[in-house]
Amino acid sequence: MSGEDTAAGAMIVLDRDTVRARLTYAVCIPLVREAMIALSHGEAVQVLRQIVPLAAGRAFGSMPGALASDKAFGVKVVSVFPERFAQGRSSHQGLVMLFDPDSGAPVCLIEAGEVTAIRTAAASAVATDALARPEASRLAILGYGEQARGHIAALLQVRAFDRCAVWGRSAERAQAFARAAEAEFGLPVRAAATVDEAVADADVICTVTAAAEPILHAAQVPDGCHLNVVGSSRAGPAEIDGALTARARFFADHRPSVLAQGAEFLRAKAAGLVGDDHVLGEIGQVLAGGLPGRRSPDEVTLYKSLGSVVQDLAAGWWLFRQASEQGFGQAVSL
Image (spheres, helix red, strand yellow):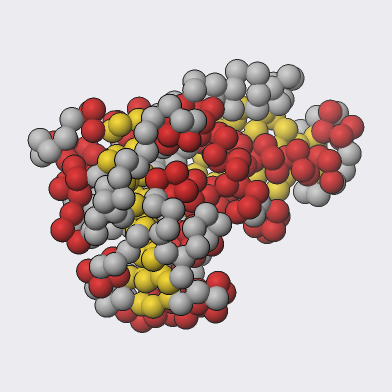
């Protein structure tokens, strides 16, 4: 495949295995960091995701955006079928489609499940680097699904954790996950019997569950902890309670999205515990130095991740450029 192929109207298709092999966390974390700064500066653009509820807790979503007015733009479309995870498959299936900023032509189609998995964990790593205490060494993961492994891998890029605890509703599956993660990362990983046990001495907590109701409460979280609240990506299901939302210094990936669709924030607001000003701003503002992040060692900080399409576009555009230059992927004539 050559640049002439693409210029002549071919579109590059990148499958899951290609994404997994090429888009490492070392690559993706800086891409996400720059995308979030651009979003908070008003250079990158995204609108509220459109979510179509389907039967049995399933959903279909569409997320359009642009890296900048003169840079790549595109859309991610994805279905979420939670029961697939229990079958050992990804719950997210979809596509990222990229368009050329000069010609307006569609130039790349990428399997979205793997991009989503990698960039979500990368975003939590970016937030952790900005908000967690520098000496943070104890990690807790609530959930053992497809995001759990990725969060350990990504967060090890930004902090020197020396232990990890994992909790999930099935003790057997949590133990299996802990054994596999310990073997993969060379990090002591233990399965905790309860949420209390998992987070009791944590410096960083990641909630990556499919919980419909809160599993983590304010009284369980140690002072000085940083939280990445990731599992719920729409209004409705919530992983943490209103008291914890109110207690934490709260940062969004994209403030308009969290104000409209952030379940934990919306529940706390409906209970009269917080107002819109509790969402202090966006992680991109903290990264750019325009908004203070952590102000003291004892403060609890919180990053609410709904998922930003600019993260998908930044990762996808990097993959497309690499594919164009190095000749991998499949060229399909339109």
